Image (cartoon, rainbow, N blue to C red; front, side, top):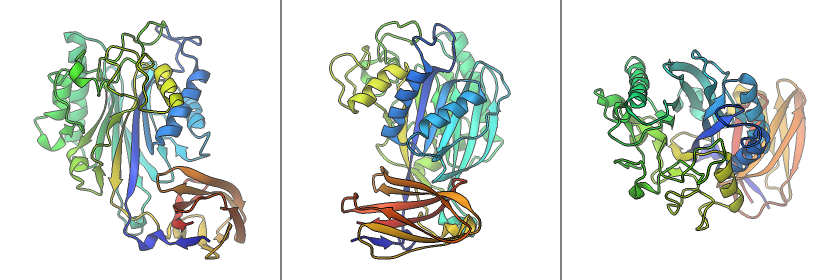
Length: 419
């Protein structure tokens, strides 16, 4: 027997999973990388495996070819399992390098609001602002998350370090002149070798302390080739030269997601979940070794490990954010539907009755409480009254969340389902 419970009657919190990843010359034939050693089709399979494992709500990337077409291509790849779940902002840039940053987001949970280019020295640093699809929107309030995605100048030596400093300084000056009191994430491949680098000091020890960023794992020191930081190194996943990827094994911490004071303290609805930060696939056992070298890495499933080891020379980094907002609401009042109802309780079939303002496609998705998609159906809803039936007999006993999403990606209603 199934009992459908309104999540809107509960004091609920949601969790957002954030993933940052350098994709290694994705879609680009350059600097030794080509269709043989960095094949896009092969990489697509690896990326899909990683996305299906992490299930990010925000997915930011570096080293993507500066092409709207390739960004749209990657959107199709990550939407293979969840049709139309992910969306992306339009590609906007001022500097015209061969590589660019991009971001993808779970449109069931988030809505894109705006973007800006923070600075364009060497490469663009991009800002993307999202708001959470909450019932509090009815009262003109919700949670905002602002992602600043950077790929700082690579290379050792004073000249490259100074260029990273300029990029970081420009970024922090932008924040000084804009809304400082917000939920910011500073994320990307920073190519920084240690905490004394000027760029790191700009981000974390700025003269304006209100805009300082925080390292979620609080790992201060010189990360380069330092065994003490073996659990946090993100480059390189390769121990031998394939002509494209950096190699020599895991000995640098280049990739980060830093959090603002507001995120650290949970000041504005969004808070970092303690101990959720991780370089995905990093088991601490492969210092100066490739990710796929002995000993066997058991931190992730074998197919995910293979994808992480071969797709890029970087590991992605991830963290979770708790969102202090209501999640199950009558959002359908503001979108396609004017009403959604159902027969309750039910046995093996969930019988839905809907009233739509116009004919349109809609997706009904059932997730378990861990966020795993269990059932998804996309159908055309005719204008006016209609019914739709879903077989739920395959669901084991437990709690589930049912999402109703219109064709624009608006989460029009969310309800708890008890099996």
